[in-house]
Image: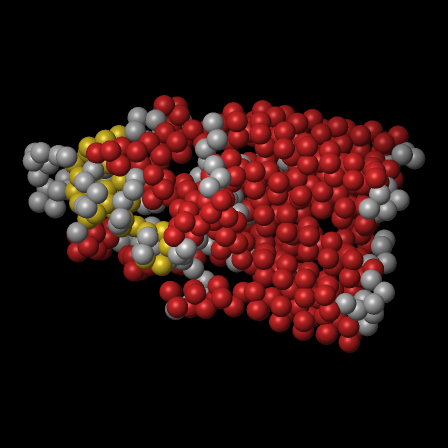
Length: 507
């Protein structure tokens, strides 16, 4: 590693740290998603109790990212401030993603070191990526691991001799990606198929490499798969089935409409301009002796977005489900724009257009990451603090701890309210409710059978969507000013009056 490369790495990490701190400190150190608090509950219980549970003593699989849970548990085990530690994990992952992306660009285009600089800065300076770094979620780790696997493929292609160690490490990397998010196995398949297409050192080495990698991957994944099998009867956690039921209406739409819903979330900002760089990137890739190396990031981007368009087209919260593929789009578009700048110098029109695109991309990226994306992150954190976190504290201080609370967003309440039992109407920790999703009366009957005494949720989360249901007696409403500014309704806590009599005394 040259000194110039190390300086570039240091600068990218510093830029990532500055942008991450800019977001997190402005928002007060919270999280922009209730699911972030679900991760915190699992991390706390693993770190302090040594058990994989949301409710202590009740093993469950609502965490879709066991690797992230383990990383969070280390902070709790060491007694570190949980928010600072979580944000540090995200910011370090953002910086490493930029470093690895720059190294990938340098490996593919060694005669153009300035392109590595530009691509690294584009990766750490994309507002979606900084948002993900501060989200307290696992997506930023999978983003970083995607570039680590790309580099592993590039190095395997360049290696003169077969290595059992490299093969095993590649398999472990794929396993870690899968333990970060289930679609990590798809990323591993894309990288593996790239090696098959390249066949470095011949087909026999590819077979040996693949066999060792699959074995190493399986060894690492086996405990997780067995745990899921024991808890749910399947290889995946409950959350997948619950979320699939939630998007049934979207799945009825034509596939092109669903794909546009996925794609549109990912091009808000400079990415819309980076798309222009995909054409020169594809032309550049086609000129290379090892084309598959260049097309590998685009293959992962296409595979991941198509998977979600087919299975889970949920265009919510800035497309957070689809974010792991976004850096690959930014990488390809960034390299393409940079290459366009070089190749268009001979003609006036090309020179002007390429520079306009490059400057527009840089200016738009700066505007979004420093202002618009920053505002979105701060707003998202405020909504969670003023809705879910505020409700959790009110529940902790005002409701009897021994009476059952039914709710949809379990994260902040699970972390702050200190209750021994919750009734999860979203089906993340109560999988028995999944068949009832969408059937209001069946849900009410299930809640009554289970003995629910209280309900927490937004109006649209109430079974049937009616906040004036005579069974609901409102005790508390958040009156979140941030939510009201968007002309949407607040969360409320209700006492459930099964006899439809709200006149009795409330706690």
